[in-house]
Amino acid sequence: MRGGNNVRTPTVYEGNCSTVLYALQPKAAPGQQQQDGGGSTSTFWTQAAQLTFEGLNLGLIIALAALGLSLIYGTTGLTNFAHGELVTLGAILAYAFNIGFGLHLIPAALIAVIVAGVLGYFQDRLFWGQLRRRGTGTIAMMIISIGVALFLRYVFLIFFGGQTEAYAQYTAQPGIEVGPISAAPKNFVAMGIELAVLIIVGIALLRTRTGKAARAVADNPALAASSGINVDRVIRIIWTFGGAIAALAGIMLGLSQNLKYTMGQDILLLIFAGVTLGGLGTAFGALVGSLVVGLFIQVSTLWVPPELKSVGALAVLIIVLLVRPQGILGRRERVG
View 1 (tube, one colour):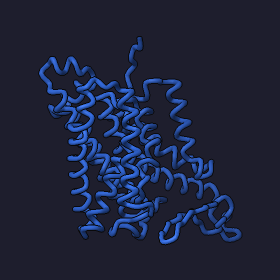
View 2 (tube, one colour):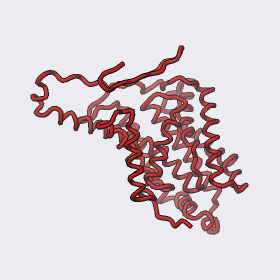
View 3 (cartoon, helix red, strand yellow):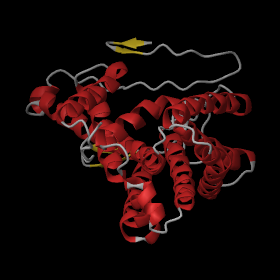
View 4 (cartoon, rainbow, N blue to C red):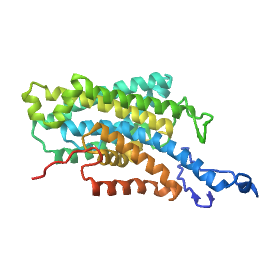
């Protein structure tokens, strides 16, 4: 189907269904622009407001996923390429409890987040922790994480399938208008939940003993251990919360779009961009960097085709790192 530059070429396999979204806008009647007193300018700012809202929504989802990745990197030094699969895991677990067991999406999502947190704990206890005790270097562990990502991705393909699915509730909702912004009610609720979780985690990092211990381990693990902090225990707590937060990000992503087994892989580059832009290992930097990435991805479609919308975010990443190699909120470190 084609309408100007609005071109989509979907691939649909026999026995499967696929959803294709088109940005449809009514064509203005002759003379309407003069009636509006400069309708093209009004339309531009309306689109800008709508895309800014959508960028904030996307940025908050990326921030949830990036927060867990940043915390894990800060405490262990591991660049986990399998983190996108943790995002997919949360969405698929919620789908299994929602569709398979017939639970409403809200309790299904809560159970999925808890299960993903438990799996994150045992993932470190039984796998990554063992590698650390054997003295495996961070580069080797990063390469191992790529293998883990590929393994999990095809496990999802076997059990979930290659089709696109949706949750039983909150799939199709009539939009509500707030000024120039039009969105489904679930988007406003989801953004509120995402903001609340990010604020709670930020306060926990600053005020609680575990948060202070996590920041101490991130700064200097050896010094933290000599001060009486159980480094392994702190890392497992971080893996638990990192897995749970990544699962929540996957559920929110599944609400805003349909579920598929590659959804974590598709967003992984944006997660890394948000973490790197904000500053590696900094939780608040991951939030700031992810919001910038989400905003530039959506707002850039005012000037570039939607197929190239990720280019704007990556261009901002390159420009910022040329000026501040440590990221927006990162700290300078001596090398050598």
